[in-house]
Length: 83
Image (tube, rainbow, N blue to C red):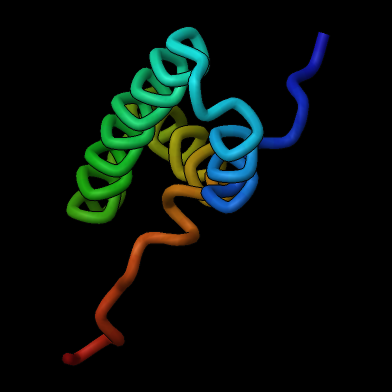
Protein backbone atom coordinates (compact mmCIF):
# COMPACT_ATOMS: atom_id res chain seq x y z
CA UNK A 1 0.00 0.00 0.00
CA UNK A 2 1.46 3.34 -1.06
CA UNK A 3 1.35 6.64 0.74
CA UNK A 4 -0.64 9.69 -0.26
CA UNK A 5 1.45 12.63 -1.51
CA UNK A 6 3.06 14.71 1.25
CA UNK A 7 1.28 17.86 2.37
CA UNK A 8 3.03 21.19 1.83
CA UNK A 9 3.11 23.78 4.59
CA UNK A 10 0.23 25.82 3.17
CA UNK A 11 -2.08 22.79 3.27
CA UNK A 12 -1.10 22.04 6.86
CA UNK A 13 -1.88 25.66 7.76
CA UNK A 14 -5.26 25.34 6.05
CA UNK A 15 -6.03 22.24 8.14
CA UNK A 16 -5.07 24.16 11.25
CA UNK A 17 -7.28 27.06 10.17
CA UNK A 18 -10.29 24.76 9.75
CA UNK A 19 -9.68 23.24 13.19
CA UNK A 20 -8.33 26.08 15.36
CA UNK A 21 -9.68 24.74 18.66
CA UNK A 22 -8.87 21.05 18.24
CA UNK A 23 -6.21 19.84 20.69
CA UNK A 24 -5.86 16.65 18.61
CA UNK A 25 -5.11 18.58 15.41
CA UNK A 26 -2.70 20.80 17.34
CA UNK A 27 -0.89 17.72 18.73
CA UNK A 28 -0.67 16.14 15.28
CA UNK A 29 0.71 19.34 13.73
CA UNK A 30 3.39 19.55 16.43
CA UNK A 31 4.34 15.95 15.68
CA UNK A 32 4.52 16.76 11.96
CA UNK A 33 6.75 19.73 12.75
CA UNK A 34 9.06 17.52 14.82
CA UNK A 35 9.24 14.91 12.06
CA UNK A 36 9.92 17.57 9.41
CA UNK A 37 12.83 18.87 11.51
CA UNK A 38 14.25 15.33 11.57
CA UNK A 39 13.91 15.14 7.78
CA UNK A 40 15.80 18.42 7.45
CA UNK A 41 18.62 17.03 9.62
CA UNK A 42 18.74 13.93 7.41
CA UNK A 43 18.87 16.16 4.33
CA UNK A 44 21.75 18.16 5.81
CA UNK A 45 23.63 14.96 6.58
CA UNK A 46 23.17 13.47 3.11
CA UNK A 47 24.35 16.75 1.54
CA UNK A 48 27.54 16.62 3.62
CA UNK A 49 28.29 13.08 2.45
CA UNK A 50 29.57 12.65 -1.06
CA UNK A 51 29.33 9.02 -2.09
CA UNK A 52 29.76 5.86 -0.11
CA UNK A 53 30.85 2.46 -1.39
CA UNK A 54 28.76 -0.70 -1.36
CA UNK A 55 25.49 -1.13 0.49
CA UNK A 56 25.98 2.12 2.41
CA UNK A 57 26.05 4.00 -0.89
CA UNK A 58 22.82 2.32 -1.99
CA UNK A 59 21.15 3.31 1.29
CA UNK A 60 22.37 6.89 0.90
CA UNK A 61 21.09 7.03 -2.69
CA UNK A 62 17.69 5.75 -1.53
CA UNK A 63 17.59 8.36 1.23
CA UNK A 64 18.43 11.09 -1.27
CA UNK A 65 15.66 9.91 -3.58
CA UNK A 66 13.09 9.91 -0.77
CA UNK A 67 14.12 13.31 0.62
CA UNK A 68 14.06 15.18 -2.69
CA UNK A 69 10.25 15.21 -2.87
CA UNK A 70 9.57 16.11 0.77
CA UNK A 71 7.86 19.52 0.99
CA UNK A 72 9.90 20.58 4.03
CA UNK A 73 13.12 19.92 2.07
CA UNK A 74 11.83 21.67 -1.07
CA UNK A 75 10.51 24.65 0.93
CA UNK A 76 13.66 25.10 3.05
CA UNK A 77 15.53 28.26 1.99
CA UNK A 78 18.95 27.54 0.50
CA UNK A 79 21.86 29.76 -0.38
CA UNK A 80 22.85 29.65 -4.04
CA UNK A 81 26.04 27.68 -4.79
CA UNK A 82 29.15 29.74 -4.09
CA UNK A 83 27.32 32.23 -1.86
